[in-house]
Image 1 (cartoon, rainbow, N blue to C red):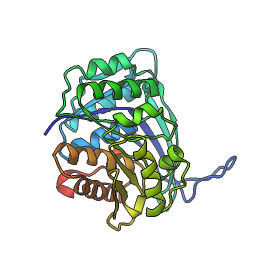
Image 2: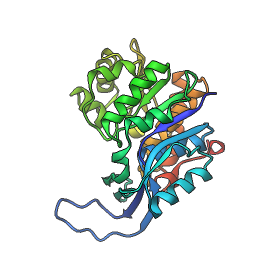
Image 3: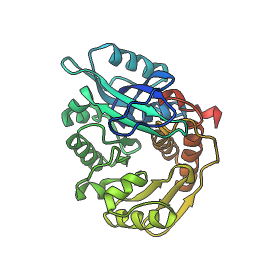
Image 4: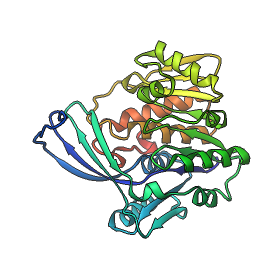
Length: 298
């Protein structure tokens, strides 16, 4: 099993659980307040580590309490934190999250040091990576840094899993360098112009993305599961039915779990089923990293 090198963001999540999400300009009196470690990169790194992956995390934090606490938490989960850089000028990233009684959320992120992770730093962190490793990356760090990382991995023969979140347009030359692209419905819709609501529209979007050169497209569909397309044929892999209390980090859990299964050599249908089960378990709990399951729980 090769290493899983996660490149991405680290945030501290400040969560308020409330009956419903506020409309613009509205104040809603909430209930419980929670403060948890988060950030898409960090969530995916912790998910992969708890599910049995050999994980290195490439990120940037501020020289502050939030950053120091985050690094301590990663070490407790057995993550190699040697490629985490500290920025002496920027604060660590923060996310403000509201969660309603159905488990739906809305999130605003102040990226802080995440926005200062450079291509040179990522290149330095990938110096000893090889073809047996898997790189997992998202879009809460600068797009230029993401592009540089993907190009470097292509040169080194390293398979890249890209979770294109938060949703934004991507340069066409990035797609052929990706082993697996893992968008959710919203992200797939933004990348293709096709509103994704079910398996049929997921297939249409996946075909369009595959035509751009992606090796394998996996569109996550929330409670419905995930749609897998290998360039020739697709299938819907259903998720277990659970009672969701908080969907925060469910997509991150899926991506981290998928990376673990791929690094273990599982075929894609089995890897996606593994990821669906891990994500389903995560939504039954509150919080981002606090909700991420351990291998024995699956």
